[in-house]
Amino acid sequence: MRCLLQSRIRSRKAFSFGIGKEGCDGALVPGFVIYFSSVAKIPVLCYFLLMKVAIFFGSKSDTDTMKKAADLLREFGIENQAYILSAHRSGDLLRQTISKIENDGCEVIIAGAGLAAHLPGVIASMTVLPVIGVPLECRSIDAKGRSSNGLAGVDALYSIVQMPSQIPVACVGINNAANAAYLAVEILAVKYKELSDKLKAFRQELQNKAKENGGLGVEL
Image (cartoon, rainbow, N blue to C red; front, side):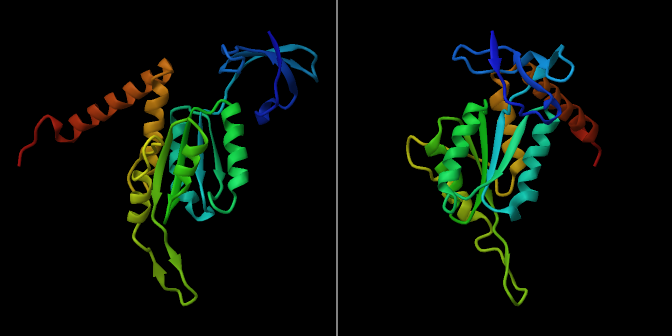
């Protein structure tokens, strides 16, 4: 079945359309795709990947913390894309982006937020995709160089875990974006066997390290 494809993969810009696997609803799913090169005029077989996890956070200052989620997802070979959008200052763009990532095949959302931390809940109200919230500690420095950490992220933690009934948001520890990524891996592993195998191998590695670090007994 032939279908038009947008060149979302930078390294595939020379390819304009192809034949790929399609889901029951007609949406593309990851699989081998035959691309027809507009340059060489020959078919090329390659693997077409769709973004599986979207990462949202409201402020550029949170980049370093949220990057830990992206780095871990890449270790498991999971495609992801990050967006800096505020639930309050860019609501319309946020809604448009949620619609876009759903169409792009996203399956899990990670959202980091501090202070009132509305972003994860607002996103959850716009989609039926699972949303994992990361409460972020908000630090600011005033004109005199004085640092303030507000409520040290506890305000964001309470905001995310106290979602109203019927619109749940999963929540990890304060600033623990890596754990949000691990949870995303577990959710996706239910569907993708190769990811489940990677996760089981990772857990076995943790067991092996525990044995090396005294898990089999130590002398005190």
